[in-house]
Length: 113
Image (cartoon, rainbow, N blue to C red; front, side):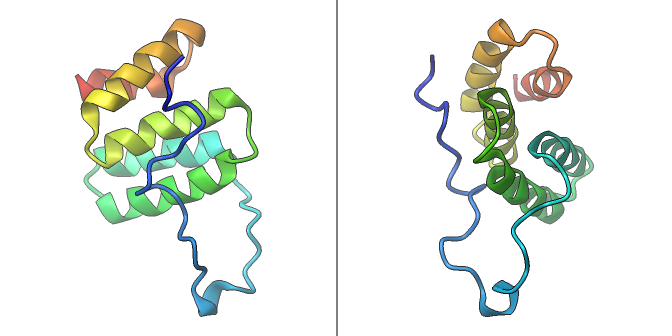
Protein backbone atom coordinates (compact mmCIF):
# COMPACT_ATOMS: atom_id res chain seq x y z
CA UNK A 1 0.00 0.00 0.00
CA UNK A 2 1.21 3.51 -0.73
CA UNK A 3 2.94 5.61 1.89
CA UNK A 4 0.50 8.36 0.92
CA UNK A 5 -2.32 6.50 2.64
CA UNK A 6 -3.23 8.17 5.87
CA UNK A 7 -1.33 11.37 5.10
CA UNK A 8 -3.03 14.41 3.65
CA UNK A 9 -1.48 16.86 1.24
CA UNK A 10 -0.14 19.86 3.10
CA UNK A 11 -2.11 22.21 0.86
CA UNK A 12 -5.37 20.45 1.70
CA UNK A 13 -4.82 20.28 5.44
CA UNK A 14 -6.69 22.77 7.56
CA UNK A 15 -4.42 25.45 9.04
CA UNK A 16 -2.53 24.60 12.25
CA UNK A 17 -3.59 27.88 13.78
CA UNK A 18 -7.28 28.68 13.68
CA UNK A 19 -7.99 32.32 12.81
CA UNK A 20 -9.42 34.26 15.76
CA UNK A 21 -12.70 35.05 13.99
CA UNK A 22 -13.44 31.31 13.49
CA UNK A 23 -12.51 29.96 16.92
CA UNK A 24 -16.13 29.79 18.06
CA UNK A 25 -17.34 28.04 14.90
CA UNK A 26 -17.97 24.31 15.46
CA UNK A 27 -15.67 21.94 13.54
CA UNK A 28 -18.48 19.51 12.80
CA UNK A 29 -19.23 19.79 9.11
CA UNK A 30 -22.77 18.79 8.12
CA UNK A 31 -21.36 17.16 4.96
CA UNK A 32 -19.36 13.94 4.89
CA UNK A 33 -15.76 13.77 3.69
CA UNK A 34 -17.02 12.06 0.53
CA UNK A 35 -19.62 14.75 -0.17
CA UNK A 36 -17.05 17.50 0.36
CA UNK A 37 -14.55 15.72 -1.90
CA UNK A 38 -17.18 15.46 -4.64
CA UNK A 39 -17.98 19.16 -4.30
CA UNK A 40 -14.27 20.05 -4.32
CA UNK A 41 -13.69 18.06 -7.50
CA UNK A 42 -16.75 19.58 -9.19
CA UNK A 43 -15.57 23.08 -8.26
CA UNK A 44 -12.09 22.30 -9.57
CA UNK A 45 -13.39 20.94 -12.88
CA UNK A 46 -15.38 24.16 -13.32
CA UNK A 47 -12.27 26.29 -12.69
CA UNK A 48 -13.43 27.48 -9.27
CA UNK A 49 -10.01 26.86 -7.76
CA UNK A 50 -10.44 28.84 -4.54
CA UNK A 51 -13.73 27.09 -3.80
CA UNK A 52 -12.14 23.73 -4.61
CA UNK A 53 -9.28 24.40 -2.19
CA UNK A 54 -11.66 25.46 0.57
CA UNK A 55 -13.86 22.40 0.07
CA UNK A 56 -10.81 20.12 -0.07
CA UNK A 57 -9.59 21.54 3.23
CA UNK A 58 -12.99 20.86 4.80
CA UNK A 59 -12.94 17.34 3.33
CA UNK A 60 -9.49 16.74 4.83
CA UNK A 61 -10.65 17.87 8.24
CA UNK A 62 -13.73 15.63 7.99
CA UNK A 63 -11.76 12.65 6.65
CA UNK A 64 -9.45 12.56 9.66
CA UNK A 65 -12.00 10.48 11.55
CA UNK A 66 -13.40 8.65 8.51
CA UNK A 67 -12.73 5.14 7.20
CA UNK A 68 -9.59 4.58 5.09
CA UNK A 69 -11.68 4.52 1.91
CA UNK A 70 -12.81 8.10 2.52
CA UNK A 71 -9.34 9.28 3.60
CA UNK A 72 -7.83 7.91 0.40
CA UNK A 73 -10.61 9.40 -1.70
CA UNK A 74 -10.03 12.84 -0.19
CA UNK A 75 -6.27 12.47 -0.66
CA UNK A 76 -6.68 11.65 -4.37
CA UNK A 77 -8.83 14.76 -4.84
CA UNK A 78 -6.39 16.93 -2.86
CA UNK A 79 -3.43 15.71 -4.87
CA UNK A 80 -5.18 16.40 -8.16
CA UNK A 81 -6.38 19.85 -7.08
CA UNK A 82 -2.89 20.86 -5.93
CA UNK A 83 -1.33 19.79 -9.23
CA UNK A 84 0.30 16.54 -8.11
CA UNK A 85 -1.24 14.66 -11.03
CA UNK A 86 1.21 11.76 -11.08
CA UNK A 87 0.76 11.11 -7.37
CA UNK A 88 -3.03 11.44 -7.72
CA UNK A 89 -2.98 8.95 -10.59
CA UNK A 90 -0.85 6.47 -8.66
CA UNK A 91 -2.90 6.59 -5.49
CA UNK A 92 -6.12 6.48 -7.52
CA UNK A 93 -4.88 3.32 -9.25
CA UNK A 94 -4.14 1.66 -5.90
CA UNK A 95 -7.45 2.81 -4.46
CA UNK A 96 -9.42 1.49 -7.43
CA UNK A 97 -7.72 -1.92 -7.12
CA UNK A 98 -9.38 -2.21 -3.73
CA UNK A 99 -12.52 -0.13 -4.36
CA UNK A 100 -13.31 -0.57 -8.08
CA UNK A 101 -16.75 1.08 -7.85
CA UNK A 102 -15.48 4.45 -6.63
CA UNK A 103 -16.73 6.76 -9.37
CA UNK A 104 -15.17 9.92 -7.93
CA UNK A 105 -11.68 8.45 -7.81
CA UNK A 106 -12.16 7.00 -11.30
CA UNK A 107 -13.05 10.48 -12.64
CA UNK A 108 -10.05 12.06 -10.91
CA UNK A 109 -7.75 9.33 -12.24
CA UNK A 110 -8.98 9.83 -15.80
CA UNK A 111 -8.41 13.57 -15.54
CA UNK A 112 -4.97 13.09 -13.98
CA UNK A 113 -3.54 10.95 -16.76
